[in-house]
Amino acid sequence: MDIQWRKSSKSSNADGAECLELSFGGGEILMRESDNPDVVIRTSRAKLRAFLGAAKAGEFDDLA
View 1 (spheres, helix red, strand yellow):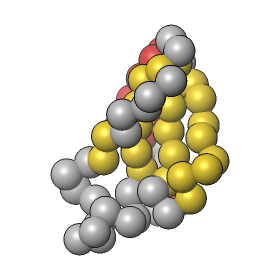
View 2 (tube, helix red, strand yellow):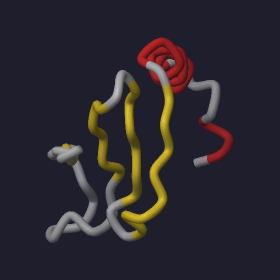
View 3 (cartoon, one colour):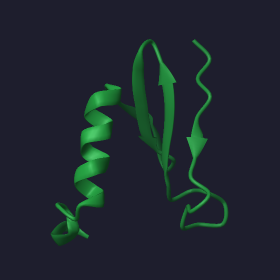
View 4 (cartoon, helix red, strand yellow):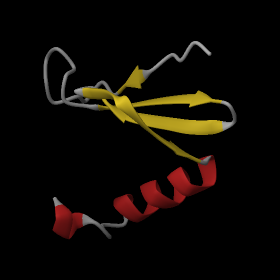
């Protein structure tokens, strides 16, 4: 399976080495860190949506 990774335009490093990359494959959302591309986290659209909603609501602000 050929995976097309997407990086945010807001990546903190000019060469894009410090960002989270996302893709879709096999019915799942795939995530990895650009500086450690061999580790891939798989999740569902619903779980990613729930996480993003919680992050937008500030539920994880104490971790940043």
